[in-house]
Image 1 (cartoon, one colour):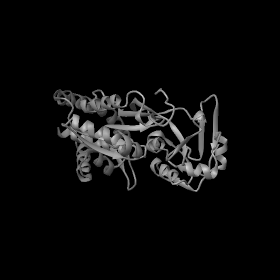
Image 2 (cartoon, one colour; image 1 turned 45 degrees about the vertical axis):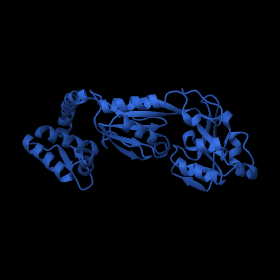
Image 3 (tube, helix red, strand yellow; image 1 turned 90 degrees about the vertical axis):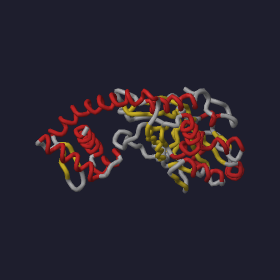
Image 4 (cartoon, one colour; image 1 turned 180 degrees about the vertical axis):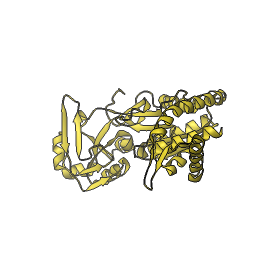
Length: 308
């Protein structure tokens, strides 16, 4: 077990390129990780890591050793996991989720999951930053939009409409845009979390309208943009789940529905592993069942779209 701890500490530091981050991933102190790695290097009689004040990198020997060691760690985890999971889902489940979706949609699901699986403990981190699940020690993540990380397995959970909307007072004062290009004459409330915040794309690939927008209000999150639109400060474009209640109540009015961009999707993502822990499988299956069919956030305010 001491040797497994040493190898695990070395792999965590190598992946994170930091003793501090590696220790955080393992849930132990930096001093403990440093001690384990030093003991491994002393036992092998070889330097595995180059250390500077700013960075940690693998030596050639360390790179070769890590490649072989990963397989051993995966086999060991699979062995323990197969025994541990015989009693059903249990243990700590670390989850990364986006802020707005986490607050409005995921939290109720998490509470229901916690009630259904009392042997599973939840540690949930809400951030709109694209986290590295492996390096930061997460078991599963919930992500919205395009997935660029090929190092994870993704399961599609639900579709999300991107809705352009404004308040009735704003539209009475400034007019209602009839086409996407009319947005150039309007005050845009911009979500800086978007991949290209100042360009709003509409339509499909074969009939696409890219519109450059401008506005004095920019927020790093959908909730603030929706709140500003509710105050009649401009037009915003947001995932439907962030504005659904306001759209149903009439506080916000959907615009340009005929030009809406293609649906984006909510995914559950988790690292590749030879043995998928029961707690991860149970959580992903729970979310897939929870969001099956037409999402609640598309209902009660306009024409529905099928989840594709």
